[in-house]
Length: 515
Image (cartoon, rainbow, N blue to C red):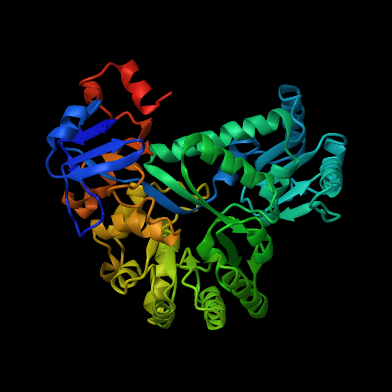
């Protein structure tokens, strides 16, 4: 057996046993074939490349359990109109971009501030652009306006036509779908490059797997095709949570996961810019029917439910579904923020997984309000991560990217420095939530999440061992390299030339596929 890469002289955290530490790891064919505390002679003799870690730390690749990569890519492709406060300025920017991008079949503008000086409507956009398709998205991402040319194109589609209201205003749940459906030609190629760059940026943060929650409502939705194509090209781990109000459609499309958002009273201040999805529920009966339908079809369901009201709706639906069939599908409550203690007990009893957005713990007036709310209402808990972990609830971290820019290491820092002391995680518990527990949440535990024999070699090299760093210093740790399936995909400025000790740069690139 010829070993492709042998890592040694560092701290390797396999995340298989509590705080176990190894010293040597061997990769062959994108899989881990050996991990231990010493190097066997046969592996040492056959290794093509030896990588001296120089005391640095290797952990499994991080998983972002709640992100919107397509939305991030669309924002990069769109014409930036942040700061524009008047219609004349918008018209001037439109004409300039039309000349700059004449081959684009549809123009997307993002970042306009909705105010009395920019009273956008379908009629007004038609005056500014009567022929070419155009959509203008608000800076908040909550709504957009399309012109008649685009509305007609969407309505005339042979499969899954999209009907636009007479005023041209659409909600967040439709924006990604409209853009991904209407875009084409040069703009489509640019969107593909943008999606690729989004994943490159995530890999630079140490993220090797993404649970994508982008909107889609039909099996042939182009946005999901684009994400699937990137998955094949980049070898990224990508779990697609199919956002739809029809579990039957998801089953026909052969998806394993579906997702939806519950619109509960009082949730909006908590969500703070996280995009809505196509599948939004605010009625108990329709939500229960949806979850039961998905459950009977063997689909995992992820429901966004941050506040007490929406959490109650989610738990009622999961209880109703599990009464009809006993499948263990690891259903999830997404972006849990303010549950009551009774709701935590119900989550434990139902065996649900939970994802949280630890970025909400960044010092801010919003955090002060949430802490005050919990202290004034003792039955509420704020991001009760420690309580969940101690009750054996599978916990994962979601960033809501691109609505936020919280990195995995910053998330770990925030989780270990929770303003409520009894809810602080240990660094090891935070790492588990980003690795092995996250893999369990998407039913990928046999493929990734730990550094053990036979698993994919998705790994992150860190500048320091998080288990040996004081909690207040965790955010100072840096990502050095990221590997996907044993392939070096990103190297940061913190990497050193030590990686070429026994091979030239060119030979090393050939070996690990770095292009």
